[in-house]
Image (cartoon, rainbow, N blue to C red; front, side, top):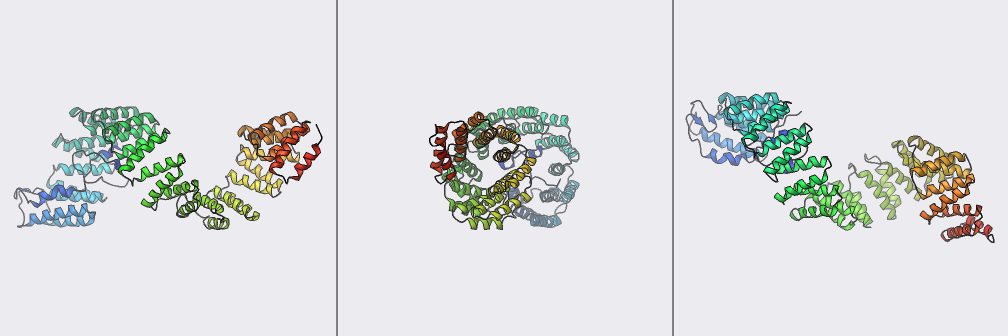
Length: 599
């Protein structure tokens, strides 16, 4: 594990910011933060000079040694303040150089060594930090801050056994040091010493039953042990003592969400918001739970509340836009995603959803522009290519769309759907060879994709290559034995050619059991017709026509069956309805003439 130390700590317990409260909320997060504004704490004191110039310097006990030269202390204090300022402004290396200069003036200043150690630890320089702490402790063995920093470094390096003795020493020197107690419990927990950790946290609670961080530490510890019920009990005890305590609200709520206990999670966030109505993270979490409960309007109200306070909140904008999409409010969704794109032009997800919203709203040219702006390396680029192809075709620019897709087929996010679209677009242009080639390229790239093979079979059948089409469908069934449409295709093909009608019946029945659709009912009815089971054929075909009355093939089949049953008038009705849709269908017109005069 790479060594990293939390920022420069102070030794009380600040409220942890929402940004740090993300799962799994390790116990190590209880280490208090050292604020970047440390310079504001030290600068006034540094500039006043030393209160006692002999026995003590500003930076710790000097074992009776005074300053070497007049003004050295002031120079050192200035350099110390300058280092703090440099760090706060984001120049840690320059700060380290400045502290080194201060140490050359006052090499026995334990606090300077300690401050150097904290700065080195923040930069991940573990060994240098340990050396600086050893120097601080050489001149001041009971320097509590240095001992605490030493323990923190070991904890951050997953070395709890080395941290524990230093924490115990601090508590010998200062039993009321709550920061050391808390870290000792964390160290025991990290070392797998469950009983010792619980004992330390329990003693903290005995000393101060309302101490929030001890309760929080216990709750987190039980979560790490997988004892969620015990963790929940401690979270709730903490919240009963300090309602709305931010880490407890967010962590308990997240734990309940993970358990899919939506109503309980909702109640936790609602209680937290009663204490702090302006807490954005809690409101976002509550809105997310409402989404999981399909309570979209209530979730939207929370997102709107957030956006009233923070119009640029990207998470609220994103979720509000998705709710608008879910509820088919296309223009509102487009407005939300357009704002996200304006705030973060590199956010491909927002740009993609903007394209979806505009396309649904009928603004195809604008939608196309949004999709074209996606970067090829985006995980959504393959899906965007599909939309680009459809939109270009809809705008009468099929060839242009094909060219764009072909030029971007090497993108990592390309999907089987893109090859199916490519084939369909080539077919639209009458380029049957290229269409078949697109399907074969897709199958080579995605050999397990059933739909590519199915579309290839349809393409071959359309070109009159029925045997080749059936062979492809048989291959498909080898990959996916329960592909209802492939089963239906083979059954219908066998029935049309009068081959193996027993197998055709079995396949059609299997297809209908998997997928009850009118066209599959038609196949089963047609197989029954070919087998001479006219009553069964009529039953399936009449239901298919009732469900899909606009389909002329279904009506032609029903007309054939009715004519075979001697129901001539009803058969004529079916043929006439076909001719209303297809007046040029001479085959049906001939059948109708053959039935004229028959009763």
